[in-house]
Image 1 (cartoon, rainbow, N blue to C red):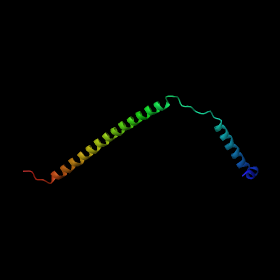
Image 2: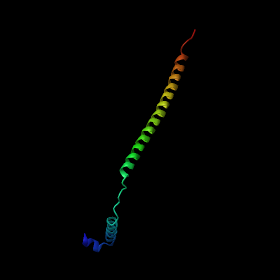
Image 3: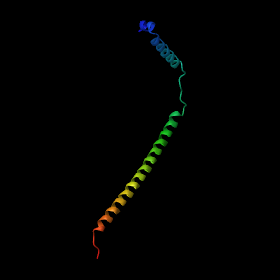
Image 4: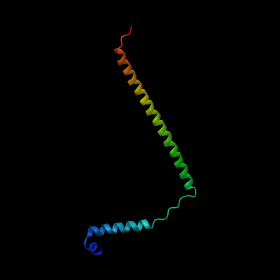
Length: 89
């Protein structure tokens, strides 16, 4: 590989860029979370779960209402068509 990098300018530039990026990355300071990070994260996850559950329930209620309304319209149409063929005294 070293011989190729000496002969190929394009690969040599790419290798240099990768090596510099790795050096920058390795020299970054370590990130230390705050002492209450885990507690805050758990709280936010629980809030997100509750929000998702409420949204899912709301969407289910809307969809169920739409299905009931559509079914009612279909049934009323069926009854109306059926009654057209009935002779009332």
